[in-house]
Image 1 (spheres, one colour):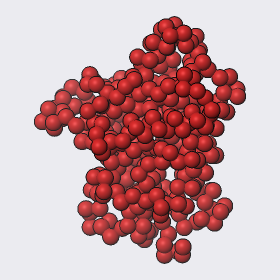
Image 2 (cartoon, one colour):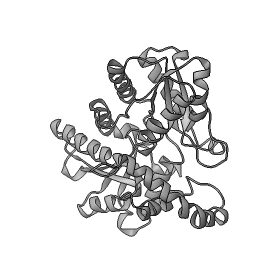
Image 3 (tube, helix red, strand yellow):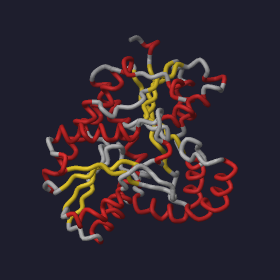
Image 4 (tube, helix red, strand yellow):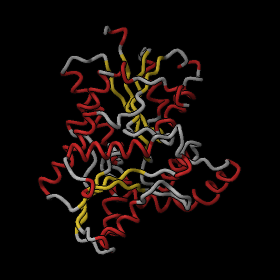
Length: 337
């Protein structure tokens, strides 16, 4: 690969407000909840509900939650994504794989995908490799990123750019080993639980179909992690968190299992979230605080949240491996629209 073939790499995660102010949280939620891949209710019904009710009430509560997890560098998700980018750049430079140049974007909020692609375009990059930071493919996350890429490439400036796309890495061997290592390191210090709970973000049951392999990929990932850890089926389980609204989502619901497990004689659990590569509001607050409180109130004795992969060395190795093998992994993003 020569200098003319340099590749701009964009690590894309979900997003975050610019600050914990109510207005910034409102702006972020408005963009996120306006996405047709996320909320699939009829627009004539959903948009008035969103702007007249939800965005007038939810931002204040969400802002208070963000304040609990905010750091001096901003949101944990943004911090860890930039940390992943920096460490990945270092590993690539060490191994002379310097034709990859790494940057970061968020699907919602800043830095936007458009702004990051624009930086590469202004520096004469002709080829971009987009890496959605979602191990399991979902139409609500990865396809949404693909749709945004399609919108960007409608702009004349970006029409001629070649955009490569990694669809998922749910069964990547280094990803599984990264999860295994993170869990084992935690258990070396804190001991093993009676049960390990692998919690993934939920999606509405109605979204599951031929083009939505998310649930199957979550289960497959979980089986691979359990096999790597050499734990039996009765020593782990899969659950889905973050349910929003009253419609039925994929089950089992994490909250329901946390209420039931103590009554089943399981009072010491650890929760790991393989679908989140960076700690964020949904892991630090929802799992580390709210879920722990629910489990203890339901009769549990010990609840531990195992941190996400974040900027662990094995996970950075996995990202490096993805880039170095991107030609065999590349998906034309337009095929999943």
